[in-house]
Amino acid sequence: MPMIRETIVTTLNEQGKVHIAPLGLIADGDGWIIAPFRPSTTLDNLRTTPFAVANFTDDVLVFAGCLVGQKDWPTRAAERVPGAVLDASLAHAELQVREIEEDDLRPRFHCRIVYEANHAPFKGFNRAQSAVIEAAILASRVHMLPREKIEQELAYLQIAVEKTAGPREHEAWRLLIEKIEDHYKHPST
Ligand SMILES: Cc1cc2nc3c(=O)[nH]c(=O)nc-3n(C[C@H](O)[C@H](O)[C@H](O)COP(=O)(O)O)c2cc1C
Image (cartoon, rainbow, N blue to C red; front, top):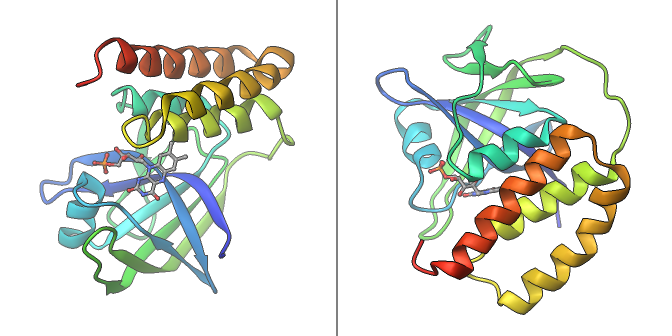
């Protein structure tokens, strides 16, 4: 299996409106593959504006926020492509789609890196951040995974949050737990 990096991907629609979504980028030699499921705004945007920015951030509140519909995070214009850089990114890569591998479920957009920049130092691993990313993935799959599996995994992940989280990780965790609990109270949402 190739390596995957969990990032915040920004794309633009035809009107130039920025769309922000957490996506796992697949390592592909010198470039990255973006593989959005159908249907999604990221997928539509990549077809009409074939550029993206991969934002590498340790702010897990952005990941959790996007999953609960808080998508309005501060950005600035990218340097070399039509796109937007997340202010919270430690580093970013500006990408151009060079080939599309069509697929009924999940087309793959092979991208080359046009430009990269670093903005702030990586401060080391934090277990609560990893736990929040795992919980975000569970929250995005509540419709597909058995409730028992989700609850077991959350119980384990919560240990790292209790032991190592800062305020943003606690808030991100709270948003995700609320979303998952809401889903079980109102399963159609
Ligand atoms: C850590 C993480 C990684 C994700 N990776 C992907 C991905 O590779 N492809 C995808 O379609 N959705 C992925 N998702 C779910 C998307 O963020 C979510 O479906 C999002 O709404 C994309 O749809 P949109 O472009 O319409 O906003 C991921 C979610 C999380 C939390």
